[in-house]
Length: 163
Length: 305
Image (cartoon, rainbow over all chains, first blue to last red; front, side):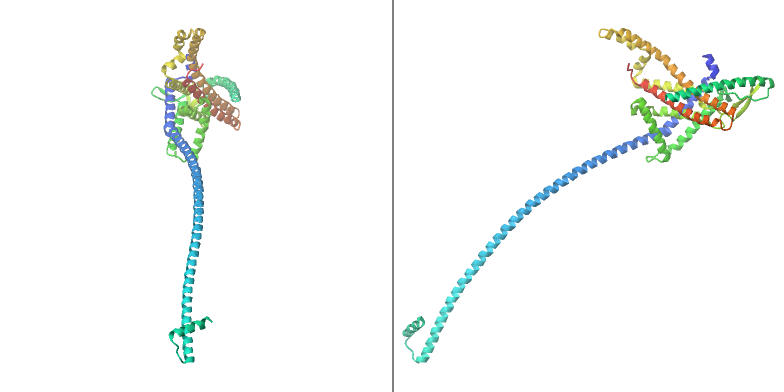
């Protein structure tokens, strides 16, 4: 041991000085370089991990939203179809209804008109008859220049008209 | 790794051989010098030489170099401190890449990222300090600029700087810090009583009466365990010795190798050896750091025999 110390000049003071040197190097490296650097690296790793996680979550959410959207659209389409069908049926019904009503009304109007025409016709005919009779009477009177009594006259007229 | 070790081994042998050759030739010269008292001797000593003294504290050239390393680390760290941002620049990117690679290597030893991160600052500090010390010893001017002192009647050249790790004091200090730190981490991780029983295994003896009915072999196994624990105490000293001498030997041998190559032909010839020494410096720093990491890992894991 003595020999070793003699050969290599091992000096406890030098040893301590070198220990202090290393302690300085260690603390300086640790506090000024490695600690902040490792912290930054760790933070970044966490951030990236979080971002990837978030991205996955967003993707999942997006796909779910897509599905929901598709479902909603499908549902809406179905509903719209049903409504359209219903509306079509209703429209058809209404149309038929309207047509029927219109037909009815037209029929009614025609009937009324016919009746009215009948009445008018009868009236006109009556009037014509009367006028004709009168005319005949007048003309006869003129021809005969003589007036038969009223009763005979009208009887005569009726007979003549019937002929 | 085994190839690397072999290369190192060969280099060491080569260095030692050349070192002895130089010593022998110098000795011859010294004899001449003692007679002539004129020529200046530049001898590669095994120890760092004192440059000046503060009271009775002799500052050696290796200590000067270590201070330089501390200064460099201080400047770089302070420079970095203001530049660390969430979005990394070029320098930070490079550093982060290095740190990531280191953590990957650490994971293969510690088998858990959490523990790697816990040990990382200490082990990385070892790596940086040793790497810079090793490489500082290779800089031009280190080992070649110095003063001439006369001692024992002849003049000797003493360089102002000598690689920090080319002094056993430095490597010994580093090894002691590493091993002591591994013990502290061990005590913190598995508790004082458990840790104490790793070395002086009282638990093994206490277990014997409890388990002897179930397993009679325990009466032989547990005393062996206790004996292994005692051997581990010697192992701890061996760790310090192997760590410090490995580093010191490699770096010192490298310096001697370079000096002897320069002595043969100063122009061109030392260049490949310079590259070799750069690699050796890196590898030795890595080996030291990884061994400290292995000790830390071993001591913080509970006994699994």
